[in-house]
Length: 200
Image (cartoon, rainbow, N blue to C red; front, top):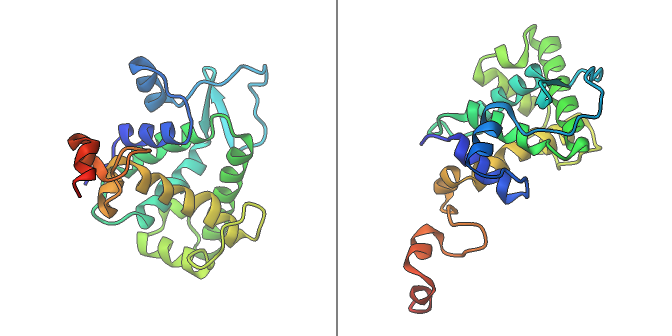
């Protein structure tokens, strides 16, 4: 089962991120969404830079998220890198708080990986990444954007990546929720029409 950029764009549309027409879809998938030019190209906060007027997640933070997705997503899923990159870039488009939270959580996870294992999070073997997240208690933490590191990782990394996967058309097939947003019963019932639902 292969995730695609189209899957990521479908998720973004579902959360209210405007992705526009065909040409805009290609631009978002390749570069991320455009942002207003506020005259500040310096972006000294270290988590997100700007290039050619486009917002982008810092490559280190994006690398952490892609590496996390590799251990969070089922082994049957392929193509997670492009999917995560497209989703994350779109997700932070108009949400500076989320943007800052993702960058900070990713940076902290990477720092812990370097401290505990002597390597960047993305450089660790998948089983080591999984164990690190569990050792931090992320698997049992309540998501909280203002909480301890385990709670913030659960909110900004784990829950966000899992939400993206399972609300995408391809990821939804894994759990039988591939139906169009707002239309019950799955794609099969969508194609049959509402009268088929009344027939049971």
